[in-house]
Structures are given as structure tokens and as C-alpha cells.
Length: 131
Image 1 (cartoon, rainbow, N blue to C red):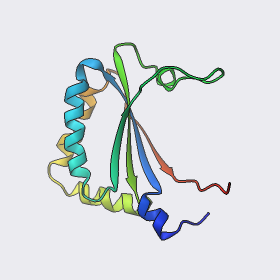
Image 2: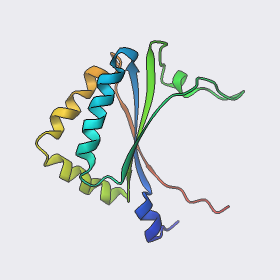
Image 3: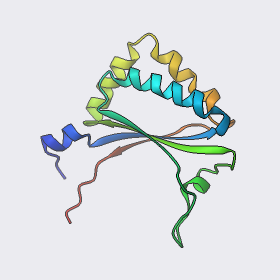
Image 4: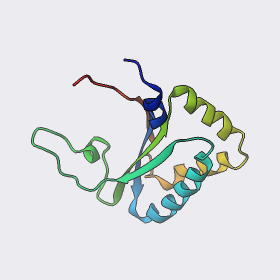
């Protein structure tokens, strides 16, 4: 389905990141992500962060925390970075790659997430359903 210019301006493309974070690393990771978002202002439309509010799931469903094997002493975070499209994302990444401090910030992520956990990433494109 084609996208109009206004839909693209609103961000029809999202990078998703899923974090398992030891509760003791809540504040340091929050600070680091604030610094990273400042770097992402190379053109990202917006960045949003969410922490899991509830481990409940409807009958017959599975909670996302169990899918990612989050432990009781961990928090489960999701980051959404919005772009106009894949080309826009690519342009932002090229600009970010030219920023001398960006790499050092991103290297600080690994030690703050749960030991043995690799940050999960996905790239999503908006689906426009005809309802």
C-alpha cells in the first residue's frame, strides 16, 4: 500500500530495541539513553522509551517479559526510534557515524543490560490496513 507524504512525515518506519536491565542499572542506563537520544537528534523524528508496567496477559496470551526471560530483579524496556522511512533512517545513521562521540556512547550500553543478554533490535514499517 502506498504512503502519502503526510504519513511519511509522521514516521512510517520504526527501529525497535528491547532491553533487559538489572534494576540496579536503571539510573545509569536512563542517563546514557538520554545522552544517546541527544546524538540521535541528527534527524530522528522522535524517540520513545517504555518500561513494562504489568506482567499480566490475557488468557491464552503470553506476557512479553516471559518471552524475553526477564527475571524478577530486572526491568524490561522498549525503545522506539521513528523515521520517515528506511532511506531517512540510513541518512540519520550516516550522520551519526560522523559524530566522534557517538560510538563511545553506544559501547556503554552492553555493560548496563543484563549479563548474557544481547539487546534485541527490529525494524518495522507501518502497515496501513483498509478497515
